[in-house]
Amino acid sequence: MNPDRDTSAQAASGSLAAPWTLAALLAAAAVWSLTVGNYPISLGDQWQYVLHALDLASQPATEQSRLVGVVLGDIRAPRLLAAVLIGAALSTSGAAYQSMFVNPLVSPGLLGVLAGASFGAALGMLADLPWSAVQGCAFAGGVLAVGLALGLARLSRGDRLLLLVLGGVISTALFTALLSAVKYVADPTNQLPAITYWLMGGLSRADKDTVMQATPLFVCGMAGLFLFSRHLDLLSLGDEQARSLGLSAGKARLWLIALSTVLSAATVSIAGLVGWVGLIIPHAGRLLVGPSNRRLLPTTALLGGLYLLLVDDVSRLAFGVEIPLGILTALAGIPFFPLVLRNARKSWG
Image (cartoon, rainbow, N blue to C red; front, side, top):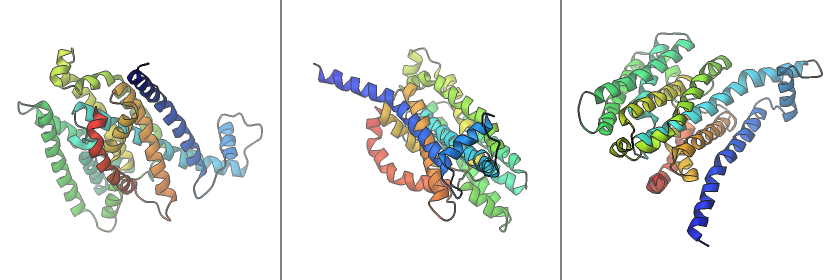
C-alpha cells in the first residue's frame, strides 16, 4: 500500500464532500434563523406558510397565519436571503482577487470599489434622494472608482499587477477624501448620523423588493466567476505562464475585475460596508478544499453565505439593540487575521 496515495485520496474525497456539507449546514441555519426573533415562529408555522404560499393548504388562512406570513415573507426571508447573497458575493470576489493578483492578503476593495460605493451612497443621502436612488448612486460610485483605477493603470507601462494596485490605492484615497468632504458638509442632526450608521454596515434596509431586484445580479455575477474558474487557476500561476498556456491574461483579468466589481458594488448598495469577509473566508475555503478555483469558488460562496447569516443572527438577537454588521465582522475577523498570516503560504500552496 502507498500511504501517500491513500492520504491524497482521503483529501480529495474530503474536498468533494465539503460543499455538500456546507450546503446542508446553510440550509439548517436558514431554517433556524427563520424561527428565532422577537416573534418566535415554529417549524410547523413555517410549513403552513409554505403551503399557503403555494395554495396547497387544506384550511383557510387564519389571523395568526397571516401574521406569520408578514414576518416571514416581508421581514425575515428577505433579510436572510440578503445575508446569504452578500456573504457569498464578497467571499467569491475575494477569492477571485487573491487568485488574480497572486496575493493571499488582498480583498475585493483593492481597486477602490468600497470607497467609491460609500462616497456614492453618502452623496445620495446628502442630496436627500429616495433610498432606491441612494443604492443606485452607491453602485455607480463603486463602478466609477474601479474604472478610475483601471484607467490610471493604463497610463504607464510596467508590471500590470503593480500598476493596478497603485491605481487602486489612488482611487481609494480619492474617494475616501470625497467621502470625508460629504460627511463634513452633511447636516449633523439628520444626514451625518444616517451616513455614519450606514457605513457601519447592516441589513435593516434589506426589504423584499430590493432583494428580489438584486438577486439576479448576484446570481449572474457569481455564475460568471464560476465559469472563469479555470482562468483564475492560470492567472494564479503568473501572467507569463498563463500566456504560455494560451490565455490572454489582460482580457481575462478585465472580465474578472468587472464581475467582482459588480458583486462588491451591489453588496455595498444593499448593506453598506461589511469588511473582512472577502479577506478571511477565502482562506478558510482554501484550507477546506485546496487552491483549485473550480472547487474553491462554490465552497467559498457557501461558507461566506453561512458565515454572514450567522453573524447577522448575532447582530439582531444577541443584544438589546441591533449591532451593525461591519462591527461584528471586524471583531470576528481581527483575531483570525494572525492565523491567516501564519498559514497564508501553506493554504496558498
